[in-house]
Length: 221
Image (cartoon, rainbow, N blue to C red; front, side):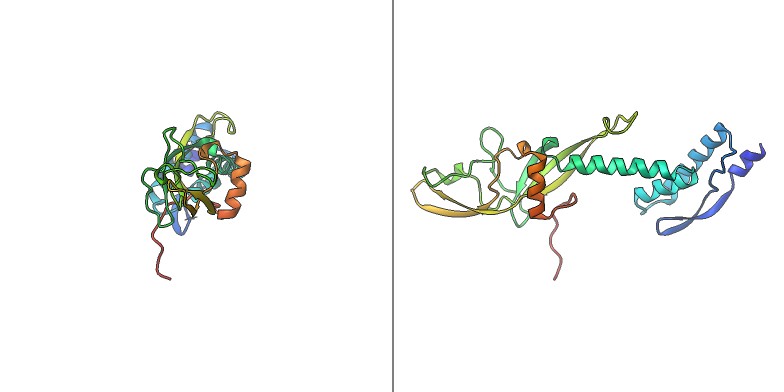
């Protein structure tokens, strides 16, 4: 019982930008029951005190208390590797919509097959409303992240919504009157989910999108 009483002690600990009282870290002499008790107490305390603190910092704090810092660091690194690899892999996407360079949703950008309308060309005259709109700059997608293969005993499959920046290029086409026009828009595949990860990484190098993001109104300046 003496050891159990010891496991109830608290010490001032840094939790992100805060200093709070959390359980004293394990010293290696605890029983299995005592380790379980400390885990649940520390988890609950960190959850209660951790408002406004990033989850990665909460996990790191819990790992330090449980003397699992090395294992936690390796696991977190693998989680973020899987996440980064899959969130920018078009084969994991479900497209929800397209947006122009002002962040406004584009009405009727899709053909009958559910993919972007074709670009058109200079050889054939086509009605403008059957062609891809100008300034298709962003796609809103749900990316499925599957952790089950990379992490042992993990059953987590999650979805993340993000706006994907699409590179812009000039494209020439003939409208229904046979007039030559020039539009600036995304000139890639009609089905953006069919783009290989390697090809999309090249596109990302152009748009410089390294993280997931939402469309926001630019601030002053």
